[in-house]
Each structure stands twice: as C-alpha cells, then as structure tokens.
Length: 317
Image 1 (cartoon, rainbow, N blue to C red):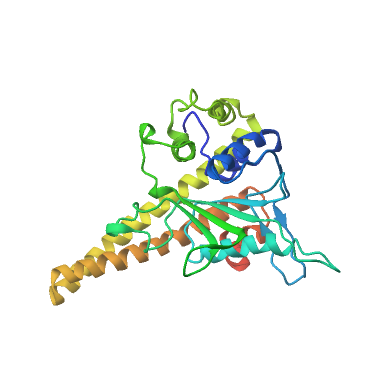
Image 2: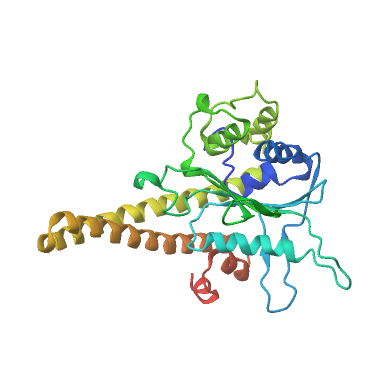
C-alpha cells in the first residue's frame, strides 16, 4: 500500500471528489476538463441516490452528482469493471437526470444541461483500437447530439465524456495540459512517492494533503483498506483467470491446429481462452465481492444490485 490512496476505489474517488468541504478540487478538475468552453465558479454536491417514480422502477445510485452555479447537472462515475452494455448504462443514468427535471402542470420543457463524465479502467470497443492494440487510441471521447452530416451540435444540453485510462500512456514530463496532468496523477496516484506538478498548479498541493494515507482517520483508513483489498483481489482474480484461460485456449488451439494448421488453431485457441478466462474471472470476482460485502453487513438487495448476482446466489455464499 502506497503513500497516497487509490482514487479508483469507491472510498478514494468520493474522498477526493465527492465532499462538499473540498469541492474546490472537483471544480478545478471540471474546469480543466472543460477548458475553453466555460468556467464553473461554484457547485453543490447533490444526493447521489435517485429513487424510482413507481414501485416497479429501478433505483439509480450515482458515484457523484453535482449542480453548477449555472444549473448544469454533472454526473461523475468511476467504473473499474468491464460491462458489455456500459454505454447503454451511461445513457440510462444521464436520462434520469433529464427526466427528473420535469415539472408537473404547465411547463415549457426548458432543461438544464446534463453532463456525464465517465472514468473507465478498461477500454470500450474495437473501433477505437488502432493496430489491434487495446491500449492505443483516443483516451478521451466527447459525445454530443450533433447533425450526422456536418457534425454541427444540434443540442448542447446532453453530453458524455469518456476517459479510458488504459489508453493514457504519457509520462510525467510528456503531459502538455492541466487536464493531462490530472489524468497522469489520478492514474498513478497510489504508486507515487511525491505529488508532481505542485509548482505549476496549487490544487495538486491540496490533492497531496487530501489523498495522503497519513491524513486519514482510523475509521477512514479501515474503510479504505477493506475496499482496496476488494479492488486488488478483483484484478488479481481477473489476471489469473485470463492467464488460465489463455493457457487452456492455447492447448485446445494447438490440438485443433494439428488438424487445420498450427497458425489457425493457435489464433482460435487464444481467442476462446481469453473469453473463457475473462468470463470465469468475472464470476469468481462477483462471488468474492459479494462475500466481502456480506461480511461488512451490506444488505443482500444492495449486494445484488452492485454485483448483478441473484439473491439466491448471494444467500448460498
């Protein structure tokens, strides 16, 4: 465990960006994210839980939900686990923030802008993967409602910004903008011995103080260490499953390759092995997380929502 907290644990992310008392850190980050467009002078951290309008509806819990001094709604999410329909989930989350602005009775449908900022510890799709390299391509993608033919923005009030961390490969001295400096620090924070860029931007000195393990209370440290263990276990389990799957796939591929040619067999075996390994790893990781959450006293319904497991599966653990 390093000198600074890992900002991509649930505790670490909300400790840095989700506290009203330290909201200037969030304001500075958002201003660097949206530099050249407009400046946020102030914001308020809103309740991150959205209850359904009907009993049959689904509750939504955002990582961070805030409203700027101009009334804009900003949802900020950190997603460590790869999901097959994450872009649909992001759209669903932002739609909640649009729909809840509706007013009963007479209303002219004027809406406040809604932004979604999504930190991803995985890459989204094949189209953004040049040279068949998963860690290359654009690390930031801005999605807007625009005219398909000329690209002109049709409505500026709905926007998604995806930050795919595995694609950001710059070293400290290569960072050219303050936004890139933010991403460098956040990506490497739990492995840093010192906080870079303090002389260039004062907010990084604040980040150093808030993110220091030494400045956590005993209760905060215990919560962080429990979450860090689950975070670390997840990646260790996934890496092992992928390695195991690749080994199995290579063996199967070599056997098939004897019949159809070694090159073709290896390729198919690797693909199948990776897929099986990831699937097995995800299921093992879900069970591990669910078990840890049960030990922490989290309700079965909340565990089911967080992991996607059924209540029956969780009760058997």
